[in-house]
Image 1 (tube, helix red, strand yellow):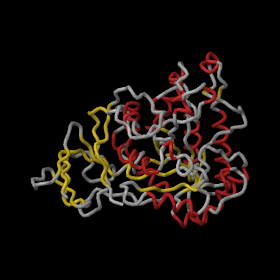
Image 2 (cartoon, one colour; image 1 turned 120 degrees about the vertical axis):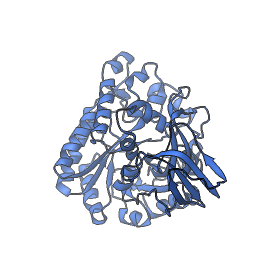
Image 3 (cartoon, rainbow, N blue to C red; image 1 turned 180 degrees about the horizontal axis):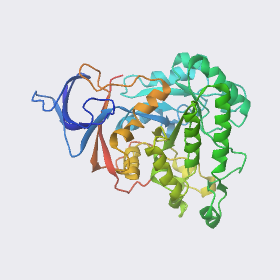
Image 4 (cartoon, rainbow, N blue to C red; image 1 turned 90 degrees about the vertical axis):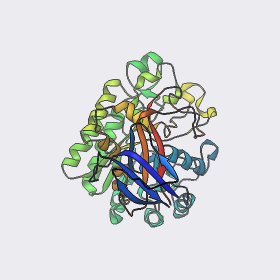
Length: 414
């Protein structure tokens, strides 16, 4: 089958035709021609206003609740959500039931992705059962296909465990992914600590609970000379601290979610639990500072942190509702609406296409004749259609809002 992508702007910093409008002819999953105008007949033609094409996007943080809670999403449906959202690759969280803490669990995830059009790159757990106690068999998981190691939203409060993990993973050059949050500082916190938390009568989570842990993590990183990925972060100060360490030669990268770029704590004024996130949404001033950090290169990755929940776990009293947002399908519209023209489009797309792959040691696709097509086609002018959602998640943000930016199609044969 032949497909012609007509008059699309190439968005790829590495490409010699970056920013140019071209036609791309794909036949049986392979890029056959790239040119200013291709007249060859095709079975399918893709065209539209503001059409762009980049390498296939990668979501560095998502949870399909499989195994254990497939009714909230499941890998099969989650992969459909990913493709619809523009992703040809996802890194899946180890926070499942049971946890991804062994070779068999990694292989289960990898095998489920076959012929789906979306690659799964599992993140293995650092600790057995995500309990933060004994270290898992990370090398075996790495051999099976795990690309990094972390306990997702279970912070490694025990410094010795993170120390050992950084040392151990250095043997095979895999990054440790850590969510920096001192959960013991303010137990059972609900939203950002500040005026709003006081007025709503909710227990606050101060930014220092993140920043303190970032400082500790960076100290351990300097001592071990390992590789560390911090995220998702919610404080712009965390990005500054990590960048200072990077300037000293430490191998550290950072990640922010689309929601933390698009929204502030003001969304919680009416106790909407769809905006109850971990880490919490913080002030509008901090949101703008995160965008500035992204623009200056102090933040490396934007993820969806897709965390679908059912109505039973979200539509209840705020302090009882689970944290998380089913943010994958509105990922690109959220990012585009948040950043606007503040960051060049090629630099923005790099944060969720090239950077995640480079951090995790995954081959970066090429837009070139003769290469297998691994592409995302999208429009920056057309609006998203939030009504036609694929996710099973109840907790979708702003489902009635008309965001700019729409994913048209992905191409990838796996």
